[in-house]
Structure formats: C-alpha cells, structure tokens
Image (cartoon, rainbow over the protein chains, first blue to last red):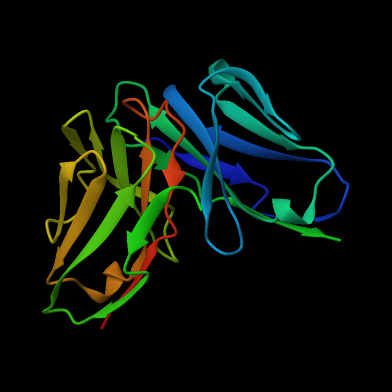
Length: 110
Length: 114
C-alpha cells in the first residue's frame, strides 16, 4: 500500500513564528487531506487539497501531486495551534479508504 | 461543539461483553464515518456510510459491526473484543460523498478492553 511520511515528527515554536509541515507520499493520490487534533483530542478537518494551494486564515496548504508531497504552512503561530497535524491520502486506483501519516506534534509556547 | 455527539464518552468492557457505540449528527449531513485512533498506530478509517452505501476498510476485524439506520445516526456494535482494540473511536460526518466534504468530528469514545 501507499506510504505516508510526515516531517518533522515534533516541532516547538515560540508564539508568532512561522512553520512548514511536510507530507510525503509514495504513490499517486486522488485525495489528500490535512487534519488538526488539539491537545484535548478534538479533531478538525483543515483542508481537502489533492492539488494546488488553498488558504484559510493563517493556514495554507500546497500539494504538488506530481512530486508526491504536500506542505502545510502556519503563519504567526498561536498557542491554540498546538496539537498534532495529520496528513491523509487516498491512493489512486485504490480503495476509498485513506492512509494516514503518523502526524507532526506541534507545541507553541506563549 | 461540532454538531456531532458520541455516547458513551468512556467505556470499559470485558472481552466477552457486547456493547455499542452511538454517534448522532445534527448537521444535516449525508455521510458518516467511524475512525479508530490507538496509541501505537496511525489513525485508521474503519467504515464510511455515504448516500446509503457502505465502504469498509478490509483490515477491520468482523468483531466490529457498523449500523447506520438513517443519515443522522451511526452505531458501532462491538463483540468479543481483544485488548488491542482499546483505543479512541471517533465518529465524523460530512456533506457529500467521498472524502471531498469537510468532516466534522465528535469528541470520541475512549474504549478500554480488559
């Protein structure tokens, strides 16, 4: 099956800093999503982005499907950005079931 | 509050018990999902109900049985579970088929199998 690798596994930032999270995948995909899980376990679907770039406030994501990676940008980070960011991909020609990466754990200090 | 509720929030069961997890969405969505999040493995999508069709992750054992009586309610029936099934079980809903719709997650049911 498809492999999904996220980097870095852990990230610590000072409030106000910018960061880039990366998701690499090993095969062609039909679908790619980014999720955020806050420290209390609540999961939020951030982006559906099989290709191109999308922005939502301080967050933006870019997927370069031909090179098999996606990037999540966080600008002017806030303490509420802390948590784990997951990438999930749906392999082209595969089942509908997505494969998740192990996530990037982000801590933003005030 | 995301509009997706799950009950119970915590559950402890023995390996011979039968229990059910319940999920209800108040968002008017037409797709619902069960996810499993365990400490040692990546998030796993178990089942999807979308437009009255069900998609299953083939890796999910048969001791997990989903039921979706209508577009607002989703159940996960559990029987003869194993300790390795202990995990956080998350429900989600979205509008639209497939994973193109934004998913809204419930708070989860934390399950411990003894």
